[in-house]
Image (cartoon, rainbow, N blue to C red; front, side, top):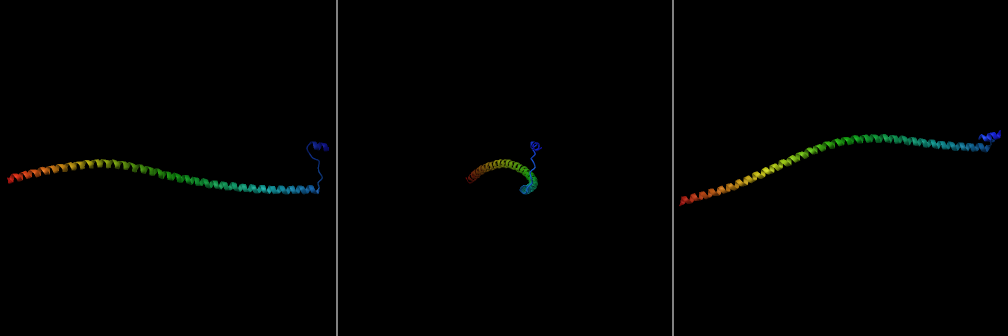
Length: 139
């Protein structure tokens, strides 16, 4: 029968002595300490997971706020770009008008100079005629 137990993988019962009980109790205490340590670590990990989840929610909210702010700012930027385009167009139109006005002014200025020149010549002619008439009257 003993051989049969050994073949089946069972050991023969050992007599329970004081040392065996102490060793088992010591092993039980060690296992309990290990279990307590594992439970403490498990609780620590669970707390860290909760903190990470909370931090993730905070970051998601910050991201959503940042995205909304970005969209708002982008809208403002787009509006300002359109305004700047309008101002640019107005400046170009004003430059064209200024160029046209400068050309007109130059033309009118030239006409004035020509008219002054003609007036000077006419005045000289009149002075010569008046002098001839005076000379003819005095002679």
